[in-house]
Image (tube, rainbow, N blue to C red; front, side, top):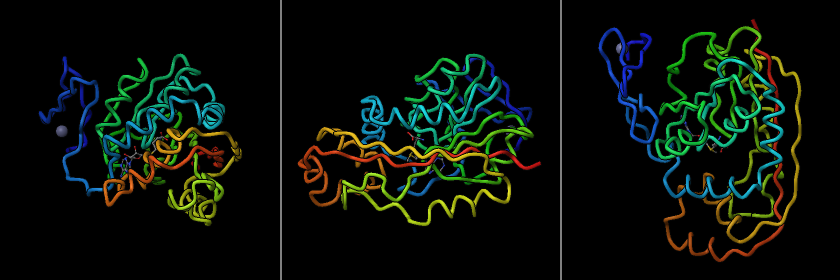
Length: 261
Ligand SMILES: C[S@@+](CC[C@H](N)C(=O)[O-])C[C@H]1O[C@@H](n2cnc3c(N)ncnc32)[C@H](O)[C@@H]1O
Ligand SMILES: [Zn+2]
């Protein structure tokens, strides 16, 4: 609210101006002070679907690529749009002296993130607002399928810091047809356009992996994505629950970007 640093006293964060925020029983802190439009924060059914789906191991190849791209930082790792904290936990496992900050506008998701790893803190926040993170303090910023605020990525990263971005490729989940929303064909181009002013791309890894999905995985992967906001209309959830098992392709890029001075 005022931009001053906060200190922790028991279960409360407090600044010099006496703004204070309680740590929720589930371990996250909600710093939001504005209302967020509906259809922004992942809802409880979406978060449940995402957690179940990620726990099934179907996206292990992506988690491996994200962890490899992040390396072994020793300081702060900020995960923008961390959801339940799956990728950040993987990176923290590989970096035993690092600490993680999960930012997400969904408190439901952060309840999960707060429990996902002992070195992970979770803060409810809108990524399109200036982040509650000081200048130049992060070694790594992760962004996995989440909104990308290039100016804030740049501001919070230390000089020479690393940005790791995972974004879907056009063939992503192609076998699910109109059950999912299609990936914008120009996504890669857009990545360069949004990040290019602040970052230089160092590497791109394509993760393309086709595997059999159970009917449950088909449901969960659809319900955890943007389509999840609309499943309670008509008989959409029933139709999705009836969708058969099939092979499904995960297709994404994991790119590493170096912060320009
Ligand atoms: C596709 S999910 C990805 C979550 C996580 N990175 C993963 O891959 O499991 C996008 C996430 O961004 C969050 N999100 C969407 N808009 C946001 C915003 N404006 N500020 C913060 N988080 C936002 C959603 O709540 C959701 O958790
Ligand atoms: Zn304050």
